[in-house]
Each structure stands twice: as structure tokens, then as C-alpha cells.
Image (cartoon, rainbow, N blue to C red; front, side):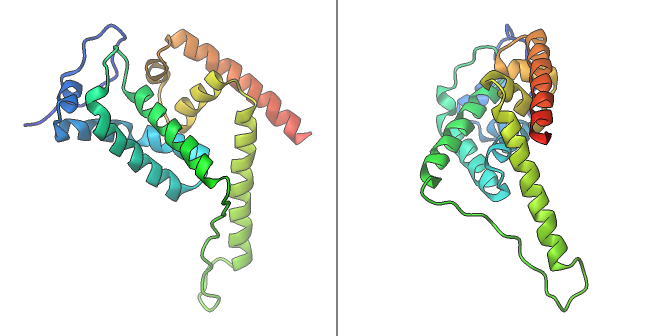
Length: 196
């Protein structure tokens, strides 16, 4: 039997059938939840960890925990994205606590010097540029209020529309537009201050 594609709903809408089925243990219905929200959760974690492999591992753990606890998910007329993001945030904080004593930086594999291709030096410089850009973005995001940062992460890193962000945050579209505007103004200011 084919299940409908999950859609974002209005705050007063009844619980979608596929979500009720997922809460009752239907694995296929849970698969829809996974496919609909994987990119959002992965993007959220990648923006925080800046490590593709760690973000992938944590994303899998988010959905493992979600599957384990889906029966406890209470429908309140909002998209389950906020619930999944909360799980992701908690996992990331746990990971930070574990990694305070160990800091490691992955170094890209170097190519064979006998093989043609980009030189080792240019590969290293490109990787350093990527790391520096990521650190700059993280510093700029730290200048934002928590609600502004969450909004920017959902909109631009998670790739959600304004409506989807409003649903995930439990806010109105107007509130999300205002948060986005204030956040972007603050980010422009922070970028200017860092460049000076």
C-alpha cells in the first residue's frame, strides 16, 4: 500500500494519517518521516559539528532515537521537525561534552605525488580555506540571539522555506520573516566588524 507524502500542516490541522501510523509502529510510515526530515537534521548537525562524518553519525542516531521514542511524540499541530531538531541539539551537546577532552582535526588524504592532479600544496590550502570559512560562519552565528540563530540554521542551512521554518519553530510566518531580517542585519554587521 502506498502512503501519501508528508506535508507541512497548519497549526490547527489534525494529525496526518502517516504520522499516526508511524506512532503506532508502521515502519513504512516512519520511513516517510525519515525521508522528509533527513536533510534538515543533517544540515543542522553539520552546521554545528563542521564534520561531515560526525554529522552523518549523529543524524543516524537522531532517527534511531526518534524511532525508539515515536510512540511518545505528542501531536500539537506542528511539524515533527522541531521534535527532531531538539533530539539533534541534545545529541550534539552530549557529543560536545564527550569531546572536550579530545580535539582532533581530520586531515584530507594526500594524493600520490607520482599521479597527475592537483598538487598537495593546493589541496591543503583549499582545505584550510574551507575550515577558515566555516569558523568565520560559526563566529558570526554566535553573535545572534538563540532564536535568530535557530531561524537562520533552519532557513539557510536546513533549506526550509519561510512557511516550513515557521511550522518547525512554532511561530507565525511574519515572526520568522522578522527574525530572519534582524538576524541578517546582525550578521552583516558582524561580518563587517570581523573584516575590519
